[in-house]
Figure 1 (cartoon, one colour):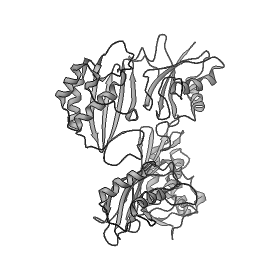
Figure 2: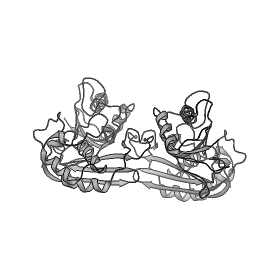
Figure 3: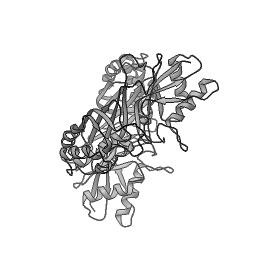
Figure 4: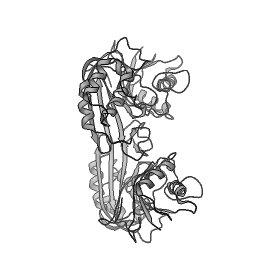
Length: 253
Length: 253
């Protein structure tokens, strides 16, 4: 039974998130339903490298499906796109996995971008793609404070209560905050993140940008290992999964 | 009666275009309805620098409204944004016009961007913002051919039948075609354009990008002054009004 690997792009707005839920359309279901058209009977299960929440977007989510039949990867990509059409999900590339490859367990890095629109007027063109913050933010202060979070730490202060990971320790490899015109862009990378970790870090760094907290406060909050010490969870629509990393040559897409 | 000038951003998707139509919501109506809340009775008429078609977006449309009362421009911007809220229209800046200023008649330049997504897979994140073209396009050939259109010409070959301008002569100041990853971006500037001129130029340059036509064909089509000679009208959703130019100091926003 060949395993096919897909690189997909989606707008998270209309979905309840990657994962199937009792109610509402998930990206997983959209992909599985499209794949079922090609499977000739029998349910298909799709797995993803990162289980994005409701409203979170992806530029390059990596997904796998096992199909009973062999199919040319280019044909698979086009056929899935045909069946996905009503939904804002697009298969950018498809390939065949080597034995033992798993999109989630073989992944060695995830990268996210978080966009804040920092201006008085609400977004029109970027509605649903940014967090609109009207107070002027100091991006340089945010970046300096973000560097405190780099490396291996207990991230309990930035972990959702709903997080199902076995432990709170993660290693943040990159957390860059830059201003691009009216936008504050946060680029985050780690082997993996806790549930809501990126959004909780962004919500906390916003308080730094507003001048309420500084790098010392971030160090104190991190050391407390207490979710109540940190800032709010930034809204999902500003977040995009931008890349999933695998050992060289392991991922076919 | 003070004249207020607004710089506004909008997503063209839900609108029938800038101008009021018998049926459907126009950007003009959305702005006028929002302004009516501040006018204390009496209809408001809004005029725009460029009357964008249905589906066409704006990053920096310039609009004027005459109000019977004086109001601080910052307050006007915020109040209009409050009343515009359900619609994807945002007032970025507001100011008071000098005597004799008119957003349309005082303008000396309009700039547009047209985005083509040139790849096999359909857009998910940029749906409604790009023209999806699956054949690989040669951006360098498109750019070279576009230069034939620079300067003062009879643009009848690129003019919509519905165009209400008094004549077909226009001066194209800039028509740059560049590739940015999977995108082909066309940047166009002129004092003013005929109806559908940018979209008709883009639809024609696409044929150059596909290798069907070259710069000589563009020269022939231009000289023919016959709409039937040129290519298709590129779809509206790829087009954005990016800037309106005025004499130095004339425009308050």
